[in-house]
Length: 77
Image (cartoon, rainbow, N blue to C red; front, top):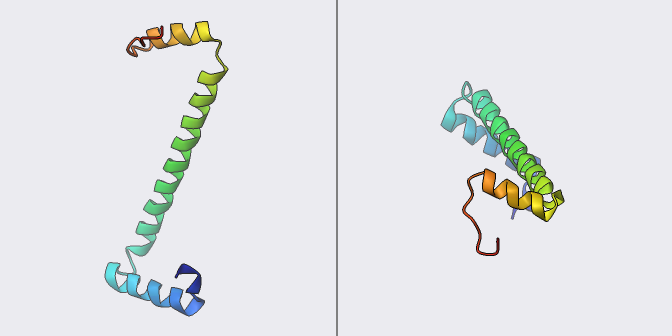
């Protein structure tokens, strides 16, 4: 379905969106959409970096880190 979109279809969709939201609000909506995507990518990269740090610590350091961070004690500890 999405692969059937041609340039004329996209222009029609943009015209309908401009009629609904108004031409003055479109840049504002685009900026907020872009900001949301940037925040999402940033949070994904932060999650990935914290997961990498946790997996590179030796097991003894991981145990001390979990006790310091206030996480509940696991049964295997």
